[in-house]
Structures are given as structure tokens and as C-alpha cells.
Image 1 (spheres, rainbow, N blue to C red):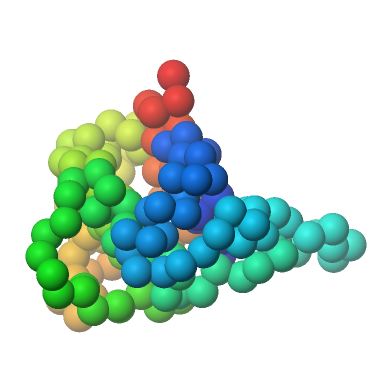
Image 2 (cartoon, rainbow, N blue to C red):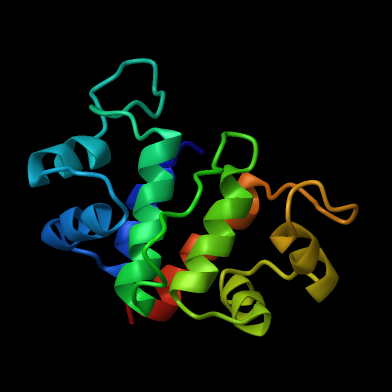
Length: 159
């Protein structure tokens, strides 16, 4: 699962319009127009069935979008800009944490969302995924968790 997939599925789950996407990116400190948003979300007509998009979503773009989502949902926290820490290795963990913050979800809410998508995990397993990288109980979050989390968000937010 790449950043474009995460962004596309989150946009669908939360029913975010293109103009809102532009505003959220701006709140995160990244300037895009609606045409750029279209390119981020539009797959190319590739014959090799890869998930290739017209414009690749970089680590910085995704993290700035998630920071903007937090700001749009919960308000600005301060004047200092948060340090960017998203990489390919921790993308799922950070994605889950930031969406959790933006939507003011508790661990129980996340467990319920995953359960709605037919994935049952323990509270301890979720806690390990939400820990800071480098913590002794940290566990990398797999694509399966994120896919099911986004599926559960769609079930909960689009009905």
C-alpha cells in the first residue's frame, strides 16, 4: 500500500471534497491546487496492474496532509511547525496515530472500527502499534491493519 492509496481511501472514508483537500494541505503547510489533488488520486492506465498514480504522494505530502487534517478537525495547537517524521517504514503506524488524533478516537473506538471491518485484535496489540518507534514494545503496523481500519472508517463515517 503506497501513500496515494492511503490518501485516496482516507478521502473516501471521511467524504472529503477536493476543495477541502486543498484547504487541509494548506493547513499542513503544503500548497496544492485542485488539479494536483486530481493527479494524486487518479491512477494511470498502466498495463502492468501496478498502483501507479499520475502524481506520486511523497512522505512529506502525506504527513503534511495528516497534520492539516488534525488542525482542521481539532484546531491549531501552537505556532511551531511539527517535525516531519514519516518514512516508508513507519508510514502505517504514523498514519494510524495521526488519524486517531484528528478524529479524537480512543483505543476502544479503533478496536470497534477494526471489528466492524471483521478484524479482531487485542488491546495490547493495538497499543504496540501505537507506540513510538524505538520503544521496546513497538510493533510495525502492517498494510492489513490500515486497509481494515480504512474499511471500518468507511462503514462508520459514510452511513
